[in-house]
Structure formats: C-alpha cells, structure tokens
Length: 129
Figure 1 (tube, rainbow, N blue to C red):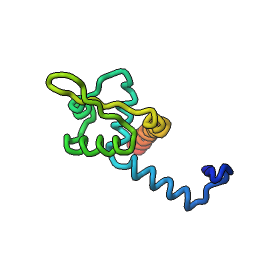
Figure 2 (cartoon, one colour):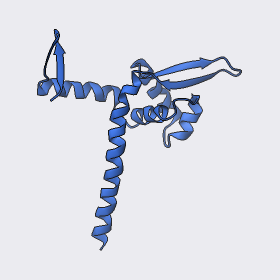
Figure 3 (cartoon, rainbow, N blue to C red):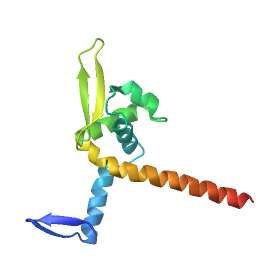
C-alpha cells in the first residue's frame, strides 16, 4: 500500500486513493509517446536536443503529435523548453529535476519490456516445435 502524509501523520492510502493517484499519473504520463520522450531526454542529459532531433529519433511520432506531447510535458513541469540565441533561432528540450523523478517508472517499464519480449519469443519458439 502507498503512504499518504496528512497533517504530518503518515497513513496507508485507501484503495480508492491509490486508484485516483494511478489515474492522475496516467493523465500526465499516459499515451504512446510521453514516457518515450522523457526517457530519450533523460538518457541524453548533456546534449542539446532540438525538435527535429527528437522527431527523427522517436520512430513513428508525427511533428504534430510531438509538438502536442512536448507542450503537455512542459505544462506538467517535466521538461524545459529553451530558446537558443542562434541564427536561425533553435529551441532545445531537457528534462527538469522534477521530470527526473519519472526515471524509476521508465526504468521499470524498460526492464519489464525486455523480459516480456524474451518471454514472448520463448513462447513462440516453443509453440513452433
């Protein structure tokens, strides 16, 4: 069970409170692209990541969707958008300190995804025999 601190007192969250928290998390992080964008940016902390680089690197995302997702991530304080003093003007994106708090979530998903992919491969190989 999750813990909630209320008036300085820690208590276990109720199932309903946990489900609300899960919904809030999915509202901010859900969808096909947000966690991938965050993971990409988190893995490149010392690089200048501009829109086109993100668009080229995250396979399958459209410019319109990338723009929408970046705005939502910025609104939720997970990334920063910085206008560079260059000609032509370029915009770079980076994960905020708060955005880095999502790293354990993406790390767990990456590890689970690797294990799951292997499990499915094993299942397909054993069913072919």
